Image (cartoon, rainbow, N blue to C red; front, side):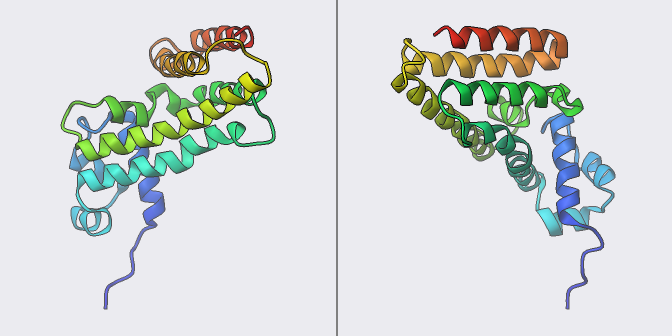
Length: 192
């Protein structure tokens, strides 16, 4: 009969997510993982598998716990430009949290070139497409309601580009410039 785990796997997954978020895949060693999680290699491999499997699980944990809550305003009672603006406001609040200073784990995973398995990069891209789909739905509603005159795909692509830039701005230049750029973006969208 197998011994029960002496630790909570969900808690360890949260710790692993934060470690990968902070250091990235390539800069995180197995020793970093076992030290941070406070477990030995046997427990690590037995519970989570290899580094790639742990990273994939941590990325999914990030998607569920960090990314999906960001999308809530795009799925609520508001629609069109009101929903998009509520999403951007929520996003700006979340970007001010301490761990947001490390960037976006999904963004880093999607563009990683240092040994990250292609399946994991695709996992990040598929998750990102959920944001794209939700924003596109809201821009289509905004167009239908006469809230925007510009082409939906142009609005969508410009907004997504700026979301990625805001993450990088927060990481490199801090909250103040990110908030200034966010306020400008939100004003511009209202004039489309």
